[in-house]
Length: 291
Image: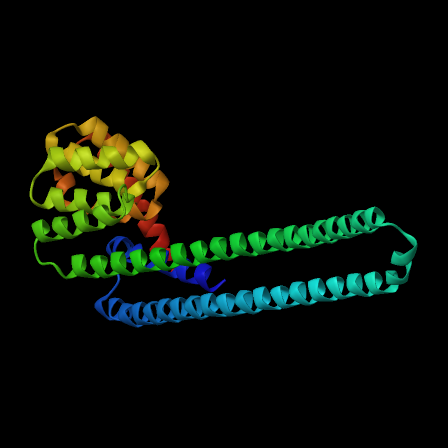
């Protein structure tokens, strides 16, 4: 449950830059984010410590179980052999009435019976030990995978923080490349990388990055918006407007950006784009009246 809560909070935190840009949060609201980041890091550390303590307890409990089972099996074998010797002693008086051949057959049969019984006991406990060993390996593997995933999440989170503090687009692109090295195909990192490429006027590169994202998720609003900006800069107006409409349909908050987006200046005067702006202004007017 805690891991699910942390995953949800991390998702919200990762989407923080996009939401901050889209909803134009004030500086004071952005300053509250380190408290959340500190809380998540503390929770991650506590979760890792809990998992390590769980692994230790599992090893101790399973070891105690194995020792108890071994002790019971040895005690059971000892009691069984003792009872066999009592039986042998009880029938010793019959040895005088039987011949040597009968005595040898009786001895052989008794030994075979004892061997079979001991083999059956050993086989039964061997199966139990094998099952315990498989269960321990499976749980250890799960714990190890969870620890590695937590470490990856922590490292990626630190890289996102680095990217926000970088002053130039080229430096942010380097950080996004590090994120993609750890988690190839991260759609959010690709989208932000496309935004940085737009800042350095690499419009075709940004278009290629957006296409990679949309090949995997064709309803990704930020990627559609970035591609619309790239098309606008490249002079493909109709495709740019079509992507804008799809982006607004997927993420309605994007509508608030199109009035002030410099990359969309080339679309002003296009009837479809002007209609889109007019619709946006009407919606904003209704929203202000409602407030």
